[in-house]
Picture 1 (tube, rainbow, N blue to C red):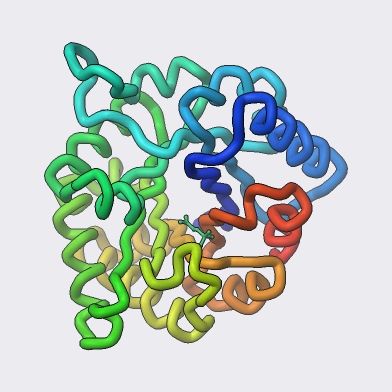
Picture 2: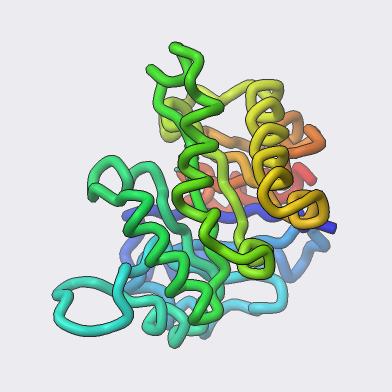
Length: 251
Ligand code: PGA
């Protein structure tokens, strides 16, 4: 059966010393807890190798926030999936709306990134979600379906089984405006149905689908109580140990 997962997305926040301190705090909090979900932190590239040394990986997973769409070569400034894997990280966020919006990531580049992540043993946390206009004009279900089809449906069923999905309505990210639990459930159920129509019921039932967008300790419990919501991808609230653990403990 699918796993519940709470993953932090630190984005472009914390210096290395600040990040190490935060990772140590989360690690210490988890050492004293028995969470009912897997817990992951996705951190800046510069922090990965150091944080990998200070956390207990049996209790806290480590991931990057992106990787390159090429394996190696003359791509100044890029960080490849093999490089990420060599730090000890085992997850990678791909297709976050900020990357799609500000760095022009398309389904085509994302297919290459997903392939490289999987080839290097990284579990992709693949983000999808509509913008406000698409929510309001009613096209949101189709928008998300297309993102999944274009980004992932080239995979075999076995490969798809390694994907974690994160539904993040763009209008809810960093805005304080969370989707209601019912809005999240409607989309998550639709996503699961979309997966089922391509890969069958077993694969669909085994896929973890996380919600992201202004998730906080105060709203996590209600959102996570929905049958098709298997956890959260947490931005702002992951930058403090207490609020992040508050969300972890919502399970
Ligand atoms: P937020 O970000 O929790 O700060 O809204 C979520 C995300 O972008 O992953």
